[in-house]
Amino acid sequence: MNDYYKFVNTPLPYGLGALEPYIEQKTMEVHHDKLLQAYVEKLNDTLKDLPWLQKLSLEELIIQADTLPMSVRTSIRHFAGGVYNHRLYFDGMAPGRSSAPSGRLGEALNRTYGSFGGFKNEFKEAAMSVFGSGYAWLVTGKNGELRIFVTANQDTPLTRTARPVLTIDVWEHAYFLQYLNRRGDYIDAWFHVIDWARAEKNYLAAAGSE
Ligand code: MN
Image (tube, rainbow, N blue to C red; front, side, top):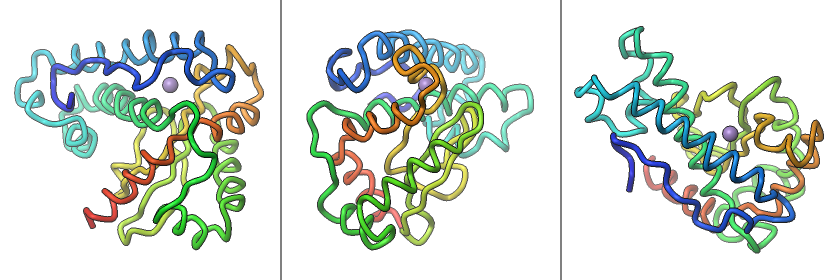
């Protein structure tokens, strides 16, 4: 795992073109290889002269950001959040996966949202509602319940006593090359490449940590 300084840009668990036609290779190249790479470098740069912060994991940096000195707080929030959010997003996708979750997450989604379609509608609505740049999330709350919410910029739900199950990046850089301003089309396409096995793992891990 690469949870500690010095951070590296972990390779995608699939090829850059593997999510086509839903997400094109050109978008993935810019997003993963250039944009996330820059976040990793800026995070390392922020930490390079701060050995006491180098001992903290990526999650600890995010959770403790508000207690850090003002001089680094904003950088940590942007860059540690950016690395964490992008990893969840990229690792949460895979080519050729089933179009709906099964197992305990599938049951929990049905219970919470009435049906898988009900979940999709609510999640899409949330992702459409992000004003400017941010993410939509499926998380487990502090009692293990499923919740949908959105964050701005590179904020993460980790700071809100929640554990993420699934996330979609709705910054324009995630879709503009392919979908222009049609965010809804991008969200519909993203539903085809969700790695539900990974989401299930995240869900069970979160449930176990309560
Ligand atoms: Mn992004």
